[in-house]
Structures are given as structure tokens and as C-alpha cells.
Image 1 (cartoon, rainbow, N blue to C red):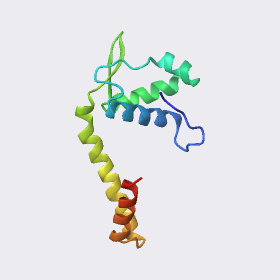
Image 2: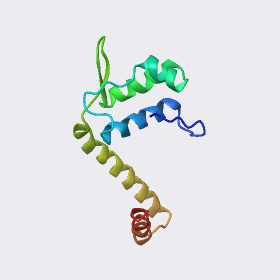
Image 3: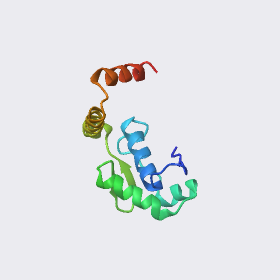
Image 4: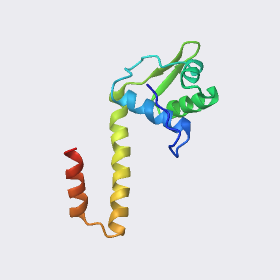
Length: 120
């Protein structure tokens, strides 16, 4: 469910955070569904529980999960999260397009690349 790539430059907690975000946004983890406990996920992934706790803290701070004292952590509805996540992605894309323009990549090249990507 949560693959960890040891060759990835990102810290493990960021990989876990990003994976959970995508699982929630895609509806794989449903609204109000309980996610694995820190201890269980740490055992499953063979990593330090503090790493899982850091990821869960980040997910809660970003609004993807909520905690019920004594019950665990639960997913927030993807319908609430998707518009904000799309906006975040579009802002990143805008930044990349601006960087591309700065080094001479034309609008037509970007459109061509995006058209090729859509056909994959």
C-alpha cells in the first residue's frame, strides 16, 4: 500500500505523506476511513514509528486526516481536498512553465510535450 523508495532523494516521511495524499484523493482511502496506526504501519514498513508519526502529523496539518482521541486517525473526504490539491498542482505547473520560458523553451514545445504526455 505504501511503497518506500530508498533511492528517492525525499525523506521517507515525505514519501509516506505523498502516498497517503494520493490514496485519499483517488478515493482508495474513503472519507472517515481509519488509516493504519502508527505502530502497525511502522511494523509493516520496517521503519521507525517516529517517521510514521511525522508523516501523520504533516497529513493532519495539511488537512488530509484527522485524529479522534483514543480511536486513531481517519481520512478526510477527497471532495473537500481535490480543489485545493488541483490548485497546488497548477501553481507548480505555472512555475515550471515560467522556468521553461526563462531558458528558451517555447510555448509550442510545451504544448507539444503535453500532447505527447496525454497520449501515453
